[in-house]
Every structure is written in structure tokens, then in C-alpha cells.
Image (cartoon, rainbow over all chains, first blue to last red; front, side, top):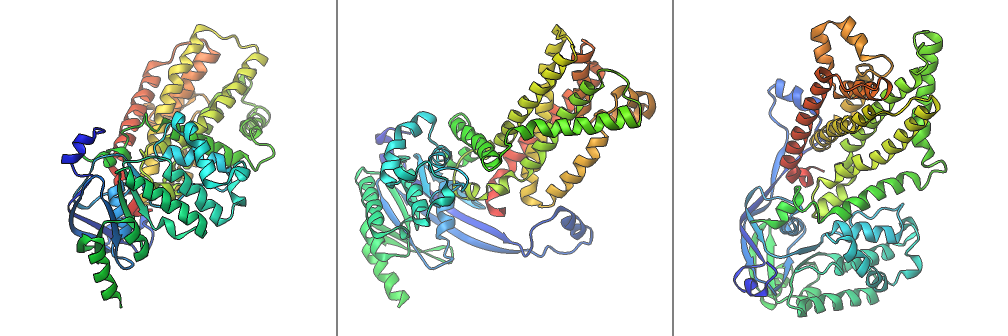
Length: 252
Length: 268
């Protein structure tokens, strides 16, 4: 799966009639209450909600695709499905290549651990082994510009520092397919710029990028193709300019 | 083929060895970093329980006449402690780690594994304490002491199995944690901690005794006492049942966990 020749024929991501249903619960489930409910033959009080329905598309290696849509359109669920953190109710999601998912920067960071310990934990959960983490650690610290604070507990970090460390780990895991969920809307202007440079470089290396954002400017800058989701369905899929123009018109 | 899906089950465990290592370290650091006594709690906890039980049974009931009674007790306490620390911690582990289960892709199995492994560090400390007691009471180690290895393996299998069952079910039913709390209190009395298994055999009748043996801790504690205090091999009728029950628990736990992890992210 590492050979680039193979990438020509196999898509990076293929969604085949994918649907994701969530059960909306009014209360947390408790075993005893469920048993009582079953015994009393009462109908379940849960409502259903399809976050994604009948979604099919294909993304080839080297494409950079923006995902847009209003709140609740299913953008984050879609990234979760591709990442493999969320499983489809129906249909098939096929992914070829190593995924780096920035669904949340610094997921699993713990306030009681130091910056260094959190980098090790986060990077290893993202799939790096000991050697890879040790090799990349200096670059991660340098990129985050936090070398002074790297042995300080995270509870003493500002939220900006927190995000810088998270992003820094994420861009150093070197995936084939990078999924980014709104990650760039945080941090100061200087650091944002640095992140965008890093992602642009990633794109120039011919890797696949999926980018969820509410910012048309950023999407235009980073993506060639845009997928517009509406109520969990594919509303429009095409060249970035055309889809963004249609989206802007609708939003007005 | 769906590589990312396979990765979230148990596949690629070896790739995530370092992540498992870091999760265990995290558990340890988070627990002890802000405590002045730190590690000592691991020793103080069984010692306090030992002191109380020795007082009650040697000085109030006057039944613990055997000079080796403290070691007899300590074996039971350590086995029960390991169980009673692992299972509640494992029950909450998926929910406690909701942020990484929702947002990262890695074999979910390493979360409950990390809980059990980090408790094994405490187990090792407490076994060291047991070693000191054996020295102080001049109980000689013999070849029979090696039976401790399979005994620990069987207990570990049982604990791992129940931990997996509890961690998976607790995602769907949040009252698992309360059921486990009550269950542990019941288990304390149904485990031969301060009385020998032979008393159950003699007094409870054969049907009740057979039911009693379904608690794998009973067979493990009995075999450990025979190995260390009597230099004898396990009583196979007893330890065999414990081994069987433990393996069934482990298989059921693995099956339940790998068949339910896909929906964890939807429920937490």
C-alpha cells in the first residue's frame, strides 16, 4: 500500500452509500431502568437522527478537498467516519493510506502531565512508536516554540500554548491523508500562518488533504475541490471556486 | 478492506505498544504526582487491612491461632485487592478517556489493558511485601512456590476478562459502576480471605461449595496458600475450576469488547 504506483488506481478515500444514524437519548442509559422499561413493554423513548445519509464520493490521492456546510450538516461526523473513530450504520467507507486526523488538537492532553509527557502520550496514540517519537520530539518542540515550558505541567499553559503544542504534534506524524477539523481557527496570527505554511507544504508533497472549515478564504487557499454538505447529504461537489460561489450566494 | 476500522479493534496492537506504555505511565503520574506519600499508599493499604483483620480474628474471635495467620491473611488480601482495584478502574476507563476515544484512532483495547497493567505495578509492590513477611516469619521458599506463577496468571486472566466486560458494558449502562461497587462488597465475603476454603467445603454442603468455586479468586487464593504455606501443589478440583472460569471470562471479555467498541464513540 506504500507504493505510489498503486495510488494511481486506488482512491485515497471512497464513500459508498454511507449513512450514520445516531440515537438521541434524553437521559443516560441505566441498565436497571432499561430492564424495567422492557418489562413494562414501554416503547423506547429514544429518537433517531441521521447525521449522514446516502453519501457517496471518491477522493484520489493528492487531492485537497474542503468540506463546507452549515452547523449540523454532518461535517465532523464525516471526518470521524473517514478517520475510523465513528463507524457507519450503513454503507462502506474505504481508506487507503495512513491517516492523520486532527479532529481535535491535543486530544487526550492531561493537565497533570508536563508538555513533554503529553507530547509522548499524544504522539504515540496517533500511532508513532518510541523511536519515531524520540526522533521527532526536537522538531515538535521547536515548531511549537515552547521549549522553555516543555517540562511544566499543562495546567499552567495558556489555551494558546495548549493548541500550539497539539498542532505541533499533529503535523509531525507525517500521514498520507490529513484530516483537519477547524483546527486552524485558533492561535495567534503568527502561529496560524505557520500552520498554513506547513499544510501547504504537505499538499505540495502530493499528499491527500481533507479540510473542514467555515472560512471560505482558508478553503479557497488550501483546496482545489469542495464538497458541500446539507442535512447530511451531498449538496454540491466540484471545483473550489464554483462551490464556494454557490455557497456564498445561498448564505446571503 | 477498511484499515482504519480494523485499527480501532485489537489489530495493530504491536504498533501501539508505545502508546500502551505511555497510558500506563500517565495513570501512574496522574495518581501520584500530587500526593506526598505517593507509592507508600500501595503498601499502607494492605497493611491497614491486615492489621484490622489480625486484630479481629486473633484477638476478638480468638480463631487465628496459627502463627502464620498474618501471611495466610495477606495472601487473601493481596489477591482480593488486585481484583477490587482493577475492576472499578476498568469500568470507568472508556468514559474517562472519552476525548481520545472520540477523536483518535487506536486499538481501544489498550485502554483497559493500561488500567490492569498499572494496577500490576501495585500488585508487584504488594507481592514484595508478602516476600518480606515470608522472610520475617521464616517460611522457606520451595519448588512448590513456583506454583505462584500459574496462580497469578489465572487470576490475571479472570481480572482482565471481567475488566473488559465491565469497561464495555459501562459505556452502554452507566450504572455498571454502582453494580460493581456492591458486587465487590459481596465478593469480599464470598472470597476465602480471612477463612480457609476448607471451612466452606466442610460446612456449606457440596452444591454450595461448587457454586462458591465459581469465584476464581477462591481457587487462586487456595492454591497460593498451598504453594507458599504448605509447599504443596494446587488442589486440582479447586484450581482447575478457577482456571476454567478465568479462561471463559477472558474469552467472553475479549469477544464482548471487540464486538461493541465500534459504537463506543456514539454513546460517550
